Image 1 (tube, rainbow, N blue to C red):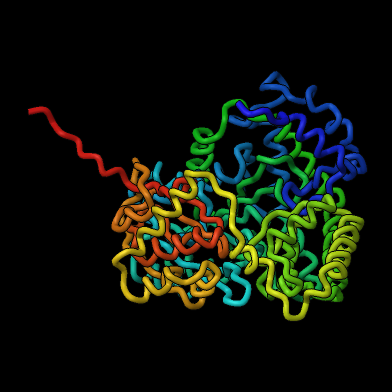
Image 2: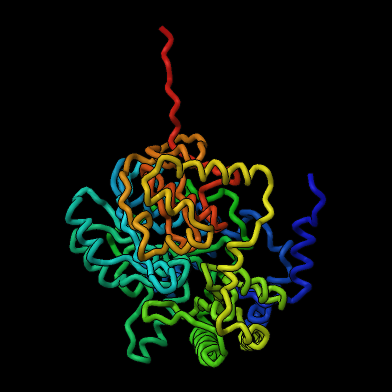
Length: 535
């Protein structure tokens, strides 16, 4: 075991540096709001509040009193018919929603950008996925929402589809048109499940949108049947807590509740449930003003950031503005480099995608947090300002710099490059280009591999690991997801094609992140083992 700082030491040290958080969870590591609304003692007495199902505490597996009150409190806040508390995150809620809406062996229509927990439900239920590919914005590389017309076409083409799953907003904050999708799904007599893990706050922002005459965005307000909200991501409950809202009469409430009893721990954390209680109580007490202040802070940031030389912002009509994507590529800074510069100033972001950094704001952020990051961005603008004109971007420069790699990584790269042998003339030409040229050749708008419809088979139950270069024609066990753009290029149950393998090879050679390919260049595919019976 290598000598390293323990997790607890890291957590304590990180806290003592007073970091500025623009990542989840929504409380941002601050106890301020808890104290203001009378819950400071709960936060201080963590060990004392960590109990089990003692008399009077109620039980999540069979809620009758206090826990039932929390459930009913959330149902009232979100306008739901029934709410379940989740202590295994939104993952458990998504799995229960799918298994409770699609019979064993049935079909689920879903976006190819769905959370990995969805694939767990598919395997458990023997459910066949029918994929809808999200569009990609050519300029920013952002995943966009699902096209309602494609959903309708899929439902018409395959009447055996039992439910539809849409992620809205997605990780980047882009929303789908849930109201239109819901009307289409219900017209075909199907159930609409919305993974709103990144949008638990949307219900409350809709009050402000109503005042401005703007359409609602929260799935609970737009006709969804089941909505799963990660209240910990942007609101005030603790990491790992979430809620499942059943909003119509279509879902089988008792079946979903039963599935949650199977999927969730029988030793639920009373700290998580207590934080869920605190979150809903604070929202009831002063939610309108808290959300209004948050909205004002975000508008302040956008207005001030727009004045910073060399800083770019993504601002779309279908974007949840609480997810702020910024770029300083005009100053020669890639997304990872910008994140690194911000970390030097003790500002921590949620993610990088290409040349962009995403700031996940939350209820716990204060005006001072926005002022601090604006000051940091102004400082970076001044420092790198001389590079605005005629300077190669950091992202391009980094592609030509030699990377320190261990022997296994070098071997993996050699094996991955071997797939280019005996390919078509175009493929050979691409493979012979310098690394930065390879990256230029592969863009969301120009590369067919990103929009290719792969042959789809059953999702495998078992897997083996094989080198990427030898995986053509094999059925994928685990998604392959290149960043950018962060959209799966191949999903479980799909057959890997030559063009996909070439695309992934180029991304790895360009030192981009590709989930689903290990350090040795291997991917998980359906096991090719043959069982022999003894004669």
